[in-house]
Length: 297
Image 1 (cartoon, helix red, strand yellow):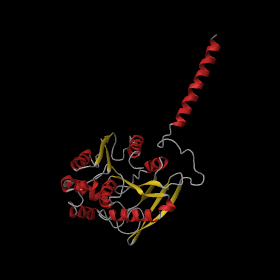
Image 2 (cartoon, helix red, strand yellow; image 1 turned 45 degrees about the vertical axis):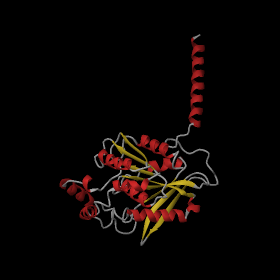
Image 3 (cartoon, helix red, strand yellow; image 1 turned 30 degrees about the horizontal axis):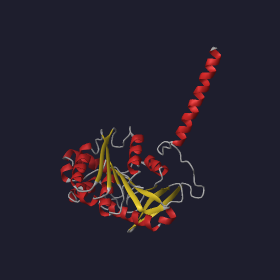
């Protein structure tokens, strides 16, 4: 009797396991699962890119999504200097059906030219031009281009999207702001300058140049002033509750300014984590893809 009971329980367990395995196969999660239903004629691809930006060349690559497309496409912008590149997010976005283009700004990580914060919007403009010119080859839908930026990249994403109103959706992750009233005290300035001086991956840049550039552009660099440029467009802001590099109050200030502007479809969220979202990478990716799916495709 005990043996037969054991066999029955084992069989029931196998049926339960099989049913759940089948259910898992039908509920595809692009954050944690490899792609399914591969298009053998147009499989996922990796394209190395050299992108002209005025008088220099930028290094980058495109993660091309599965299928003939054309696909909605995301420009992914890194921060300062760009150690956290969010490439786990890039791969998840591709599995969710987006092309993702990642690149290095002028003067950063081997891209030609001298590094500067202010001209990063020019580089984004050049990348947009390149993507549209090569849309067929890269399987890009030129009418569905969004931008995601982390830290300084979030700052640049907001500035670039304000200038290019055909950018469909904007996501700022721990987005920085260099406004005068969110600036650093003298001790913080000196620490920032000393940190910048050691960043050999930023060509011909220094702490003194960084501080001078930020001070000279304090008004122009205040992304809160750009709120009126986002009417009718979806904007997602996410920051980590334990972020000490770009504290949550910076995002709160941006969100407060944007909420006063008419017709912005703003979502601002605080999730657990530091500046790199070290303890919430899966949660971060799920939230971005969930938010983008109904509005950025």
